[in-house]
Amino acid sequence: MNWIQSLSKAIDYIEDHLTNDINIDDVSYQTYASSSHFQLIFHAVIGMTIGKYIRYRRLSLAALDLLKPTSKIIDVAMRYRYDTQESFSKAFTRFHGIPPSKVEWGKVKLFHPLSINITIQGGFDMSRKLIDEFYWSEIQGENYKKLTDSEKYKRIVDWATKARGQNPGVFDALTEWILDDSEWSEDKLAENEQILMQGVFARFKKQNAQLRTYLLELEPSGVVNEAVFNALDRFDDELSGLTYDKQLQEVVTQMFADFAVMGDQSIRKQIAGNKTGSTGTDSVDIFGYINYLEGGDASVQWALFMPDLVDRQQKGFKVDSLEYKKMPAIRFIGMNVDDIDNMEKRKSLFCIIDTMDEYKSELDYDVLFMHHNGLCVDVSHWQGFWGRFMRADAPVPEGFLCFDFVPYNDGKAGLPYISQFAYSTFSGDMEAMHRHEGYDSDAMYDVTRNIMLGQGVHIPYPDKYWTAEVFLDGFDKHSTAYMFGAEL
Image 1: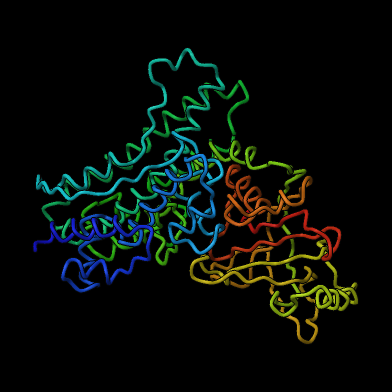
Image 2: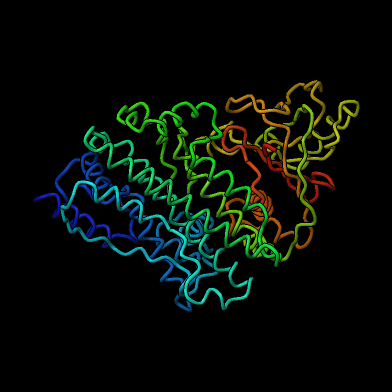
């Protein structure tokens, strides 16, 4: 059996078992190959892992099932092998851009079964194709002048939303191409320079200039989120080689001065960095120049569509205020959530903290502090601690833990964290404010984060990432405020 037949047979097997547990060993058995070898071939030809292919197909079929009038979210989640409705909702929202409860025709992605057809053409076809895979702006169109300013801006916002869904995967493909030694032999450097410098960098700069023109035209009407101009400025700087990462500045300057340095694998690794996944949020061990470009692209899109998303997310509650605070050095003192899983233990903890009035800070609230040890969320599990923010010199009572915060970034992952953050307060229906379905975490978390992204505020993820639920009326009442670590 040749490898084309093997892959086709494997895809057929997957299609027949999408509502069953699928073991990769069972899939590879259909091809008479070892699991490890088959996974390599599958990824090389299909362009994604077997796991991702299965996930995309299941989420696509799940959307079609949910469009049926009698379908229930929990039943569809179980059918496509999700352990809980919550995990299904998170995966569904990331893939389709809308929660399962909001499914309707025209708003879901349909990822169709793949078929293998091989055509061999010129050696640079695949890399040139990367350029066209980005979701480039074609906003104006024939009827652009007939639209109102609000309609014109909505068209730009719609483009940004779609680009955010598509571009992370193309940046990952760009990273793979740069890291592929076979694509960077000496005879290919000149062609690759055209592809990267003109096809990608220059085209993004052209798109930014076009967007800026459109947005400046609309600015007097008040529909434009002003933060987008700073995002465009920063993205243009990165595209011109003026990277904000001091550690990368030398190698980026070398590439712009003499593209021949890209023949050096060690240089390309620094330029490429690591892949970030289809949503642009997975772990990154090596943060390269392409990662910064992806971040610049994302910042422009967030500034465009996040304000509208935030408005839609406030259902049954509202944001009363959001401000940014720069604090002096402070210390969080508390205990792990697992150690105080009932109200009496919490009460005992805060009674001890109440005796430390001489060390209290201006953040004199009961909080649930959360972090991931300076690592990505898929590497280090969530950790929560009940306690309070105190002065930096506050002693730590026996049996308590402490986490220190300083006013600057020391450049290292994890402690000490940065004593800078967004502070938001909420009012409305308590259940709505703490709803999980359709949100990455819960409503207060998502809305606070999305306002920050829409305003172009830097969230130091993952190195210095932290958040805290704030219980303004005490630990025995609902939280109605949120702190979200920032670098201001």
